[in-house]
Length: 195
Ligand code: F6P
Image 1 (cartoon, protein in one colour):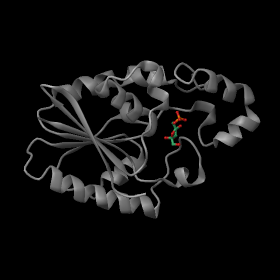
Image 2 (spheres, rainbow, N blue to C red; image 1 turned 30 degrees about the vertical axis):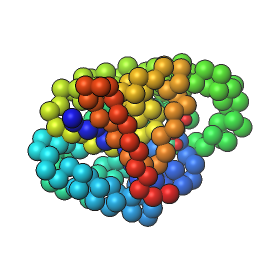
Image 3 (cartoon, rainbow, N blue to C red; image 1 turned 60 degrees about the horizontal axis):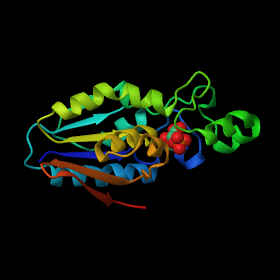
Image 4 (cartoon, helix red, strand yellow; image 1 turned 60 degrees about the vertical axis):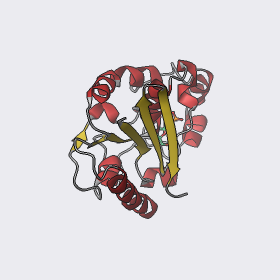
């Protein structure tokens, strides 16, 4: 059995301000999570050869991976967060106030809604295909450090959740979702390392 560990990056400065998208660094709490995660990974994957750490190309995931030593790290653009296009850097309140039609359209159909000059959940699901193929090919465990929308899609694939649910799946910060694929199906454990 070869676990896949899914986690969001440690809290970012944009998370603190409630802004979507962006490419900020992690907060003090985020850095603490990065250390706890490194500890967890080193213990959990101690005797595992062929383990690897996958991040997006955004600073907040790379910084979250940085205290983890002893395993190869790979950056994937396909693991970057959903592109919010013209709304990148805004809060949900900003969007509601300044672009009420966009806000309503997303609320109505969050799966299909595409941000102007950005992406929809369906776009994200599609660009994850090569990542999923590569994940299934791996011989060793993989730690995937990515973002909320992307992890919803990845999790739904492994946990076999319906498409419509994907944009609403809970993937909290500072929590590791461990997925084990065995003969009797998929097993899941969640480790909340901090609040
Ligand atoms: O707020 C963090 C974040 O990762 C944003 O960067 C992103 O736009 C959002 O979550 C995705 O979640 P939702 O689809 O619920 O807006």
